[in-house]
Structure formats: C-alpha cells, structure tokens
Figure (tube, rainbow, N blue to C red):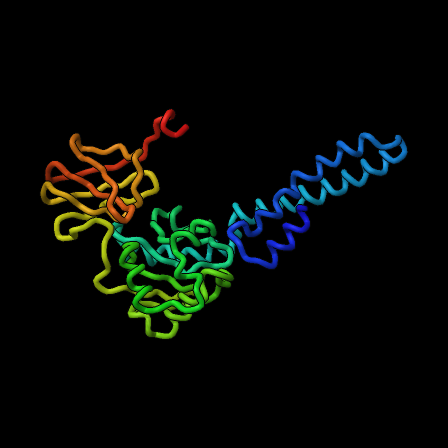
Length: 278
C-alpha cells in the first residue's frame, strides 16, 4: 500500500509531496519484529539485512539533516551581500520578497539577520497563502496587489542560485521581463534588487504611525495619535499588548486591527497560555 501511495504521489502533485518517503526511516526498525519469528539461521541473515538497511537509512537521514540545517560556507558567502544590502536600504515597516531558491536558504539567512520575509520554505503553507505563484502565468496586476497586501518594498532575484522548481518560475519571468512595474535598483553577478515605488507599509495609516522593530515574536511601533490602525500581520489571540488599553482584533481579511488608546510607543509580544494552546 505504501509503495502504491508513493507511486501515486510521484505522478500526481499534492501538498503531501516528499513526506510520503519519510516513513522509510521508521520502517526498517519495525522489520525486527517479523525477523524475530524466523528460524535461528534465518534470523542471522535477516539481522544482517536489517542492520545494513538501518545503516543506510540513518546515514541518509543524517546527511539530509546536516544539509538542511547547517549552511555551507559557499551559501554563507553568497547570502552575505543580500543581508548587507537590505540592512542599508530596508526598514522594519516592510517585508522583503525573495524569489524562492531551490534550497530555500532565504528563509534562514534573512530572518536570522532580523529581516522579515514575505514567504517561507514550507510548501503547504505557501500553496495555501500564495497560490498565484503556482500558476503558469503571473499577471502584473495580481503581483502588485500581492506585494502591497504583504507590505513588500524590495524584491530580490537570485542570479547564481537555482530557483525553486514550482513556486518561482512565473515570478522570476515577470521580473526579468521588465514589465512587473518594479524598478531595478541594483544588480550584481549573483543578485538583482527591485523596488516597488510607494510601497504599502505594515502599519496604516502610514502618516500616523511607523513600525520600529518587527520580529517573529515581537512588534514595536510608534503612533502620533490615538485611534484605529491596520497592521499587516496575521491575527492571533496570544499577543500581549502594551500600553494598557491597547486592544488587538481580527481584521476582515484575517490580518490585525489595533485600537490604540493614546499617542506614543506600543508593543506586541507573543505569549502563550497553556490551556488555550492545548
């Protein structure tokens, strides 16, 4: 059954993807159960086979984990200029979009440097939230709408890295065509940097407030007056808000509304209440 499911998963694209192959790392130890019921001489042969299969599977798992979590020095050198450029030009009021690479190292190096990105490495979430990138054609209007909705100002296009096999081609093609509506502001042998003019910031109305820091578990900003503000971050009920009186609500599109009681600084920090999580 598992073999048939693997063949079907290879032929028919689904969100499950390569997850079908992961039970292989658990299957080999289970072979010890039927092997123990064999005749003594057959047990020796079976044990040798199980040991060999276990060695091969754990070796593959170890190498996969090493390549997934430990960046090669070449990757470190390649991404350092991107981080430097964005630190010089970007602000916490905006996200950065990187046309996804095959290794998805953008989801490691940029957040690690404190630079928020618009997309991550997790395919299932990207398919659900950003389906427009998985169509054969990406329209200029649809792309610009998405950039503004996600509060993106800079878009980075890799030139020396292989692109993601599914979620990058249409975006790269539109940008390289020169018809995306974005302005090419810098280019090197490895990277091209595009800017969306008059980009939409995370906090709106922009004339009354600005984001000062934006991390995975903490957002801080300043507003000029009390009132209601839109924050382009997915709503969650576990925000711990300050100052006292700051209320957090869900926007109709699933983002966040802030009801700020007075002018000045505000802060949102992710907190969890165990009973709510369970």
